[in-house]
Image (cartoon, rainbow, N blue to C red; front, side, top):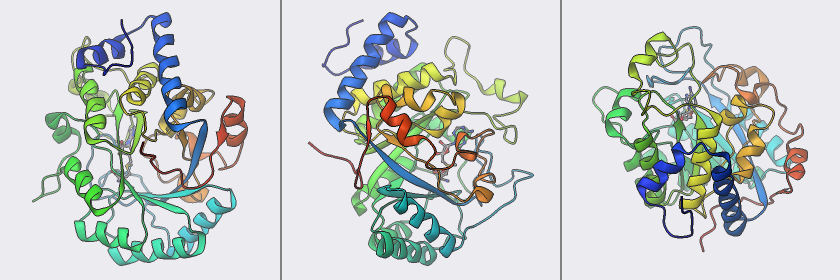
Length: 350
Ligand code: SAM
């Protein structure tokens, strides 16, 4: 299969996603790694992740903290607790903090803006938000307060699958692509992403997801395997009913996730790509490194206090639950011939 510098067409992407020959895949890995080195270099930027609330009004079929999940103890961190995490990220030398939560109206416009201002004033760190679907006035106020980036995965490019796995709230129509475009206009760097192997995801749809990253010129792209949570409709026995045929259903495995990372690097050479926590949950021994070796250039160590981290259980066995932010991350990065980046590590444009 030809894999040159020319743009990869849809059928070629599908072909690579289905490729099983280890020798052929070696060519994909080395091409993706070369493109990563040429366009974003050898620095691995660290972003300190703060999971500020696990309250959520949504009913996403895949997510363990969805509104109706039973047995979830809900929490919302105070401004002082969040600020303490940002200080820790700064102390550890990270250039960015990411504030993530369920979709939580209890995180009001004023509260979040105040926290952003306080973190900016005290640490000067770059700030990424990942707080779900919010009104433009919230997004504008947070940008004005100093936020730099916003992560909102579109989850799938297939409108029908999206409606099924990510129900709209009553009286609204969820449109994450539209929010991404508005956020870019407001001045955010925009991040998005998908889960690999969600029930109902076909090879064709997954190839279109990667093409949509390119078409939207997404600045940061998070790609992780779908990890079933027994608390959710997609985690139980019934989930099989929602799967495509055996021939067409994408598996939620490590190899396929790595292929998506590598192909995304080829189609979006300048983007920042994290080696995700979900990938290292699937393969705690080497998942993080394999992501970095097949196109990724970002790691997001968790700096949430451990007592909250265990409650932010979007899927079971999350790799970061027991890791202390600093343990071995730098050593592991150096061991694969890379180094930790300094500064905010934002999207570089040619
Ligand atoms: N509420 C915000 C939102 O929806 O964008 C941010 C938090 S949400 C938990 C972050 C991401 O976690 C989602 O976009 C989804 O892709 C991922 N996620 C949720 N459940 C997952 C699962 N079971 N396996 C893998 N990833 C999952």
